[in-house]
Image (cartoon, rainbow, N blue to C red; front, side, top):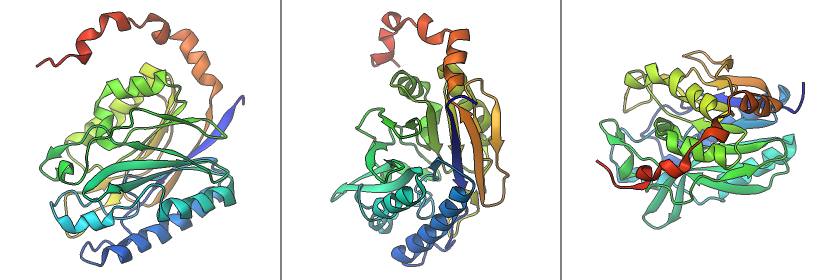
Length: 290
């Protein structure tokens, strides 16, 4: 099977489903639930697993409530320490999306990457921050300032793009140029305009950049915001844009697919997108155009 990695995604509903509970209790319930699902993923032989956007609580951005600033924590910090122990226990690399506190009043929508030996490799900070009805993210997050890093785990090179980032092909290309083999996109997206795009944009990124994409979404309707139904359908696609595994719309699930990394080289030899790029003609992309 070549250089094959078993990739997993965790798709889950909000464990508390009561945004009025004390935030530490909400986060503990979410953490306990995800620890159990990570244990289940380990039994399925998953080697690299991705959690969903801000996995340890609800998607609180439908409101603009300073209460939720208390949900932020340092990276590395207490939650990453729990995940480091799990990673080492199961020899599993883990992508851990969290609400990050850098300092007082400075917060990011981030994801820590932990290697299979429990080592913290670094973090990605969401670059593109929406600000629209139901998604008031600029109230909570600063735009990322760490670029588009790629993390060498024991199994593969991992890139991260978070939710709204997926609408921007520029960063997806940079992640490919930096060596990404499996791109994780943890998301929180509800039925509506985005659902039509959900299975178009990210397979297109996989094709344009010849890498695997693992896209996760949560499920259910979260109280008290009732923003809409998080429609799940987390999936993993290969460098040809073919779906290897897809979850349903309603239930907690662990999505698992075996990803043959040798396919990246094979596809790139067929579609010579990296050879035929013309970066010297793209100067306008870095100018402030209308």
